[in-house]
Image (cartoon, rainbow, N blue to C red):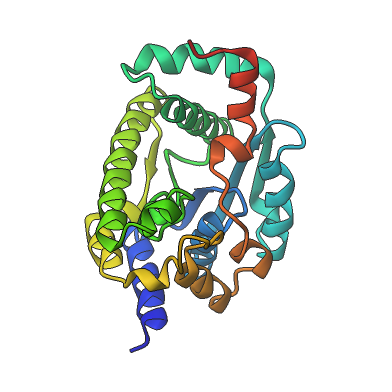
Length: 257
């Protein structure tokens, strides 16, 4: 079996395991390859798919996600929420009161997930949502993978382990914050079985060299094969705190000390 076909099957079976008892799924959605792939898989599994996007007015995620949800024929159930300044000011205080961590990216992600959870609660969409976290760690999505690549595969593997450990720690922090709203976020692609499988995919399918500005190649190929719009499948990585402009706002206002 071709590795692309095998990965496709594994992606579907992994997601199905998480949503097999649900008729409806809610997905944190930016329109990028990761969340679009997750949304398309859920749609193909005959689930009622609801998408939630957050961001400041005119942010990348707000603009881009609208186009992609329309292309996926999911725009009718796409909630796009423009963050207000007071939202962030209140959330920063709350998130920091819940965390012992002072890592800026963790705080920003907690704020973003908390915003999404409040929208889910407000619209009575249930008590959980899915995210596509894990792809960047397992398929060399982060730009820094390029600098590790020149030091050999062992260096890349060590960095991957470091990023996975960091991501799993951050997800525990997020869970602690979201518990306040009785909302849970689930990450199918950080499951033990999927991590084990994805680690065994040869590096050449993920990153081509130290000048590779796109990366995650096999994931992008799978996305296009199953019908994710090329515009989304080939879109460069942009983390939620950057795509939503949360990071820019926090730095500008020096809200994190």
